[in-house]
Image: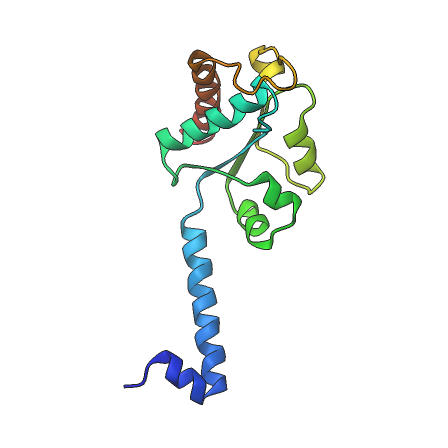
Length: 160
């Protein structure tokens, strides 16, 4: 019995069929692994609140697992990476978490037509104070927990 590679080399039409099958299988695998909730965190890391968004999002994924929640790549969306853009469109619920009044993540995503099902802003909704640039590590474990709890509550509203 010939291997797929040998068969493909001898039969270009067969190679196209094999390639199409592999692409379909890859798409199905990707679709099957999409989380129910996609998280877009500011995670700028330039300030305490930006860092908090990312640390909390990571903790949520750690607790819930990748099947329920996953972190989406904001830079990939901004760079129009096709695979990332396609996956985000297929995620049932999107939560955007911004650290401050600048609302960078929400505004950047809106520019690409992506609207969250839930929006959380640490300054407006949780009354955190942004300490300004170069305060990346100026947060506590308790603050991370408060943000984690807010994200988990938002997820629980969408997926009981």
